[in-house]
Length: 236
Image (tube, rainbow, N blue to C red; front, side):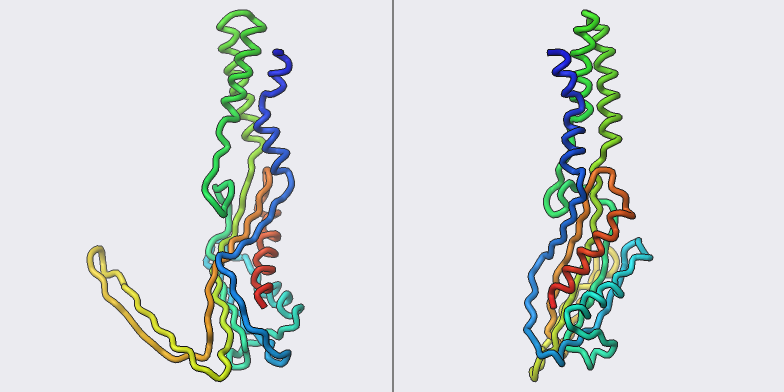
């Protein structure tokens, strides 16, 4: 029984290593956007990609352009020549402490405690005294903690705000905005405007996630980028 139970020591760590041993990449969009189909000669797109995260070297515009052109669209610089406009801002890129970045926080509680418990039982039976049990518990606890530290489930995420616009065909779009601007700690002032536009605009948020045990950022970044590029180009 002792040997059987001692074999369970660190089973939480082993389960974690097996469950998350393969790279899990997911990309989800907060809202679905439907664009009207257009003739081939109107498949023109303007791109405006911004990156306000702390990863200043992160660039997706060229790869996104290639993905869009592969679908039969032409990327142009002049908005007057475009029938679609894609504006994206990468807000955050980096390690995410959520077990599931798309839902609530979950923990990995219990690994070190299980090691201490089983180590204490084995040590107590081997020496037949409480001092042996205490030493066994300490050793088991240290072993469980070290095992947990060696096998860490790492989750990296990329959060992007997206606005995609399509040109209104023969119609005028009315736009209006009302904002409340802070003035110090107690005051505020309001700002409002309205104008006519020929663009129909839609907004959504995209989250890409890459999760794996002991995952390095250098390995996660290409997958995060590919998920974002696929999600944006898939709207066209």
